[in-house]
Image 1 (cartoon, rainbow, N blue to C red):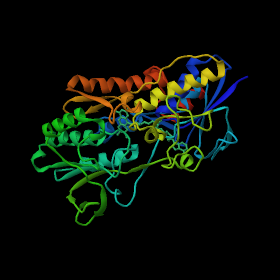
Image 2: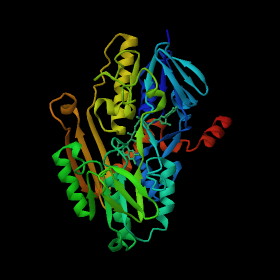
Image 3: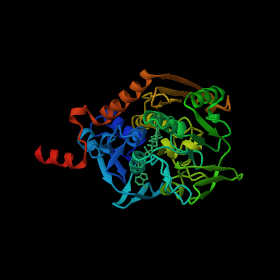
Image 4: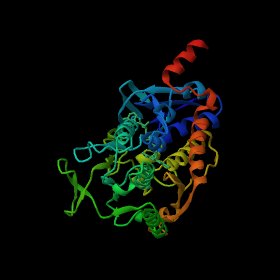
Length: 403
Ligand SMILES: Cc1cc2nc3c(=O)[nH]c(=O)nc-3n(C[C@H](O)[C@H](O)[C@H](O)COP(=O)(O)OP(=O)(O)OC[C@H]3O[C@@H](n4cnc5c(N)ncnc54)[C@H](O)[C@@H]3O)c2cc1C
């Protein structure tokens, strides 16, 4: 009998799960339904290239409806309102949906507040566009970059933003009047990733003439004086600020029986299954804080593949064998060179170490090429050969009318 797999969220984890379910199942074995409040799948690492004008919004996203044509899955554009695992049903703005298996990949929610507003960070596509406009007229001044809190999507990305801005200020010939500071609740740069990463980032900070202000948790923002003050009473004055808003769990997860006390979803390792509801699986940023991983697409990706094989095992009663991957890689474009943060969280997850086993690989120009190539590969893998990719929902509609 056909089983229904319901996927909540069409970001990294959801889109990978949907395409793998299509690839790895026989016809009629599963019915796949994917729900997202947005019509788009967005490739978030490229937001930074939208910020610096290297990409247009339509170059870093694809219509989710393409997956209907390519993978025969059903894509519903609707907001998930609540999840009731006791009745195996999900309430959405497009009605109630039932499931045999549920994959929750709703990510984390970026929640701007009065402290961060006006100092937008490129952590969502529309903020990347706001920043791009602000950057266009930037003629030098004190820049500050930092997160409201931890965890947030892509731990090294605030540093990447700062290095890119240093590059831009040098290209514009205004570096001497542009001191750049990264502030952070951590005492040392990248400290939760171990001593090798701290040393590597300290080297980069020095190389790109960026100051690090650690132990700085933002408590107040004086807009008139352009001054940020920490919980410890320290101040940072700025002319141009980038503040990454607080990240919170999606409300539908936080208010459901699936959540831990933090509001993020509970899962068991390595299955990524909920401890009480075995037909419910969680992947990506919605579970990252629960299992002690950073919020990174690479984890969402491999967890999604792992979860799909778990579901196939349950349906078929065999072990299809996609191993759980604990290695994550974030490739940074510093403007000058590329560098990769490579971390194996295996030792940390097994309780053998307080920190993951990490290396900083780079910086080389070739590493930037890797980042560009991966972006292309990402879209091709999910949405088909480049020349066949519909770039907008309208193009997709027109294509359907012609066929
Ligand atoms: C600037 C930046 C740079 C990054 N660089 C890297 C990198 O180099 N390497 C890396 O591995 N990771 C990187 N990341 C992190 C990566 O993008 C995320 O960790 C990843 O997207 C998480 O995948 P996910 O599926 O858990 O959530 P998401 O990709 O965030 O997807 C969640 C989806 O759920 C939908 N949704 C949310 N709530 C609802 C609701 N109530 N109803 C319906 N739909 C809903 C959203 O619209 C979204 O499509 C970066 C992120 C940023 C912002």
